[in-house]
Image 1 (cartoon, helix red, strand yellow):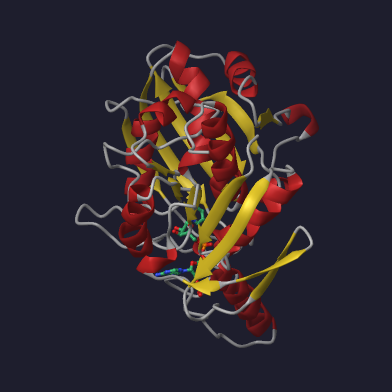
Image 2 (image 1 turned 30 degrees about the horizontal axis):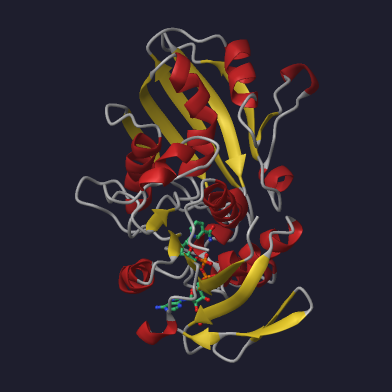
Length: 340
Ligand SMILES: NC(=O)c1ccc[n+]([C@@H]2O[C@H](COP(=O)([O-])OP(=O)(O)OC[C@H]3O[C@@H](n4cnc5c(N)ncnc54)[C@H](OP(=O)(O)O)[C@@H]3O)[C@@H](O)[C@H]2O)c1
């Protein structure tokens, strides 16, 4: 693979830092690495492959034609501002925010599922929400042989999905609670330690939250299936890493759980751990720190003809974010889509 010049906006954040770790673990060649953030982190020193990279403050002048890859991992408003500037320079831009996910001119890509969508990019490629990716990876092989009509999903999302401050917030809240105090960190909509909060992001007019709406719209886009009916409920729970969710899907025809297990396991990166006789199923601790999507509890939904229900997990900062971005860059390189 070519050694590209990579610039990361949000390079001091939890996803930006994990991205560097994944580059290193996979021995992805890197030309010149730049890390950008806000004034808060400017000057911070980050070690990468024996070198020290100093974090710089991001401005509109931070981007130039020698940035071959720009990874935006900061916020929706930062992406709206900087992605077009970087794309105009001819950089291959991967955006991890929700800013472009439903933009019809921007592909939303999981390389194991819809790599061909990279071919029609116009400079910016979007990265799915961390809850969308595992559900789409488990459902896609089933949908190809037996179309999905309707999905109901409930999530159990770790605090890492809300950024580095939320991880620290849970640790502090838990320590306070164990000492008999209630000290909400303000990183979630409610105190999160020893609690469960059924609100991630803001509410829209129809009573769904934006996180729930993202899951529905992004899944339809990735599966190229605008007709699928989807209702999501997204809940934050006090785990640190590893998003879990239970999916109920209705297919055009009944689907046998053993066929579903085999189809899901055929997707690169998906592992099925599902044996009730030995009480085998995956949990957030099993997926934390890995690049996998783990699936278990696969069974026929006995309330519905054509119904199947299962439990699926991924680490939001790995395949839910950083690892998928690395996968996108590797696939784009393979397709010759990045300027050399
Ligand atoms: N966490 C996840 O599981 C996950 C999964 C999928 C997608 N995402 C998306 O990934 C992005 C980063 O999330 P995160 O979890 O890594 O958050 P984080 O830990 O809070 O880090 C955010 C990083 O972005 C920087 N930043 C924020 N606003 C900026 C701006 N206007 N200009 C330049 N830099 C800015 C911050 O700078 P300072 O260091 O100076 O504060 C920090 O380095 C978000 O768009 C998020 O929606 C996150």
